[in-house]
Image (tube, rainbow, N blue to C red; front, side, top):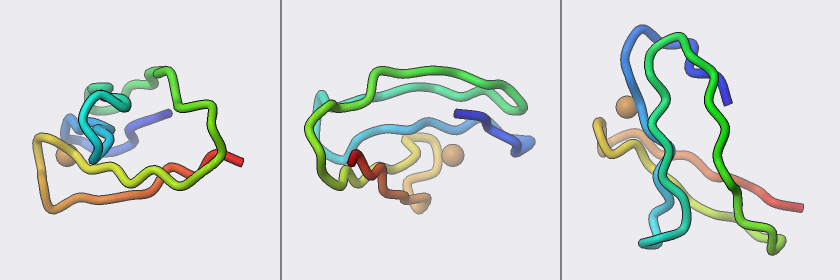
Length: 57
Ligand SMILES: [Cu+2]
């Protein structure tokens, strides 16, 4: 994934141990996503008000 923002962010699964990757500002990083189909809510550990959903199909 690419962080196009000017601030660092993380993609951290809401459930402990799912996935947690730090994406520095302006950089592209990879992480190991869950393989089981489903919807995985995540947040940014730097900015806890930021939320998203990773959908594995
Ligand atoms: Cu953030």
